[in-house]
Length: 140
Image (cartoon, rainbow, N blue to C red):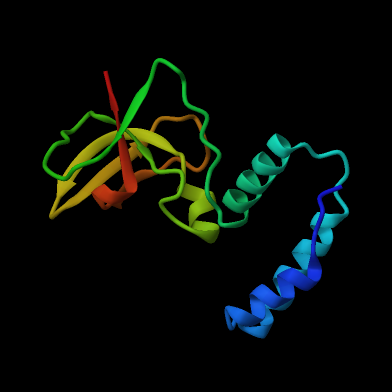
């Protein structure tokens, strides 16, 4: 069971002047955390990492070892390039729908990169506009 020092956590929240609603929520999560059994240091880090990503609506992207993805730079992409929406490009429901999706560039307009998905997932993203900072490009 992970060791949770509730008094220390409360002190930290108070010193940080954390809003009450946020602090109460954190304490509830820490209480649930203390109920988890059989965690190793490695499992603890992985649990926290995966939980934080999923709770924000960020995708869990498992890369193929042969693939190299680089951040998209406006002006350095072209139609037909294979792209992926960054795993953490958007939060919440929008992130759940878009993060980690893959497709091809079908157009470039006024600084936007327009894509059509080709990852076999529903719904198909067709003609969706993105900014470069939300995308990664597959390098061959």
